[in-house]
Image 1 (tube, rainbow, N blue to C red):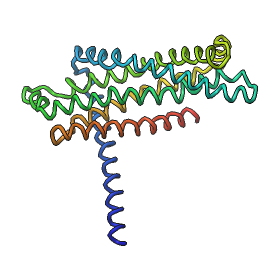
Image 2: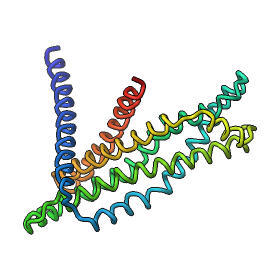
Image 3: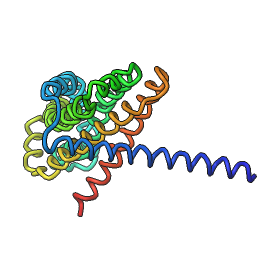
Image 4: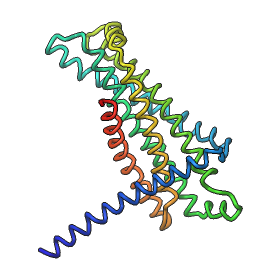
Length: 261
């Protein structure tokens, strides 16, 4: 019995220490990034290259995700509307869920799976192949050269992709309402505009910006902390994806709670 308790305590303690190490490492990296931004010390060409790799290459999956988010929200809301006859809430229900909750979370998770995992793999491979050490040997700080451009690209592009996602979510909702549910798309759009969901829209943008910060810091932290060759890279990518998903849900809760005060 004592052995089982010791094993349980050891497992829980190890998990807590791992979480604390991840949070501490990501927050420390964030402060280092901010220090590199004032005054600006980063590779401007690398920033534009990261904007393309992070944003332009991600918009197809974001658009597809947003279309289905809007469609799913219409189907779920329409079931309640048909049951109660409260046709005036379909626009509000779709808009609130798309702008403030489901849309930011799903787009953030898709962005994390594509961009965050790829970022961790790239940096981890550079660490394993000693490219990062080569930069230090040439008196080049890896942080402004490798990390800051990725940070700026993820922060800026995820916010812009959220706006694009909101637009296509409305398109998906309108098409689904017209073709599958039996509501005219103009009714849905009119209800959406009358609902005055500016606060929910801005909340979604704030969440997207926070997601971009957390995804960039966590993915870069795990990438630069890779040890153990190719196996270590795979382990870092797995840890990065799990940590980013957890951070997205925690940030969503915190931002939503602060907006409700």
